Image (tube, rainbow, N blue to C red; front, side):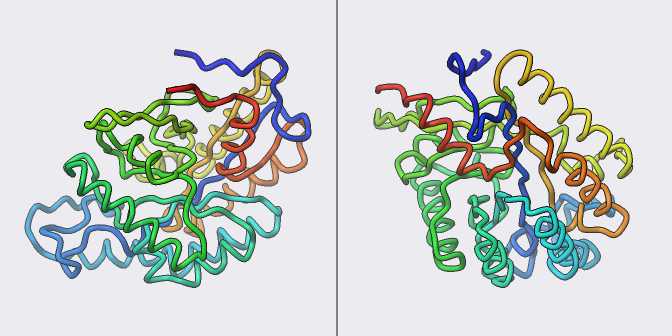
Length: 297
C-alpha cells in the first residue's frame, strides 16, 4: 500500500524531501557471555560464527572501537556540517558510555530507543516486552534527561509491539521498510486495546551494514548508492509528492578510517541543497502528525 501525502503537503520551510540521519549505538549492549548470555554476539565482522559458549574477544574489541574512536569521528562530522541526527540507542550502551548521551543531548539531537539491550523481542510475551520497553525508556531518561519518542527493534518484534509503544506514549515506530513516507498504524493488544502510532519507514539498502554483509560494498560503492538514492528521491519529491530518506549508520562500522570519509562526502553532497529538510525523526514525525490527523479508533 502506497501512503500518499495530502494534496500540497510539504515539510517545514517548503521542503519536499526530509532526510533522516540515524546513528545506531549498540556497542556495549550486544550479546556477551560476561553479561550472562548463553553465547557470544553472532553479528561479527570477523566472519566467525560460534555456537559454543565461549567469549570472542576479537569481536568484543571490534564493537568497542565504535565507542573509542568511531563515535568521536561521527560527532565531529555532524558538528562540522551542522546536521541534526537521531541516535537509536540501546540503553545499556549509553549506561556504559554516558559521554555519548551527554554529547548527543548537548547538540540538540534525539535519542530513539533501540531497546534496553540489543535483544530480539520476538521471543517475549506481552508482559515481558512491556517491561523491556519500560526499562529502556527509564534508562534513557536517566542518561539523556528525557524519554525517547521513537523505537527501533533489533530486527524482530511481536504483533503487539506497536500497541505497547503507543500505550507507553511513544510517538513513532521505525521497524518498517515499506515506503518512502510516514503513515499511521493502529496497534492491537491482546485485550483489545487499540491506539494509533506513526510509522516512520527506515531503510536497509542505504545502511552502512552493507559494509559487513556479503557481498559487501566498498566505501565508494556505498557513497555512490547513498547519493543516487538521495538524487532520485529529491527528483521524485519535486515531480510527484513529498518523500523521506533514511541513512543508517553504526559507530563501529562507518567510524573506521577507511569508511568515515564516505560519510563526510555524503554530508558535503547533501548540505545546502534546496528542497531538502534534514531533521531528527522526532521532528519529522511531529511535522507529519501536524498535517495528517491520527485515525480514530
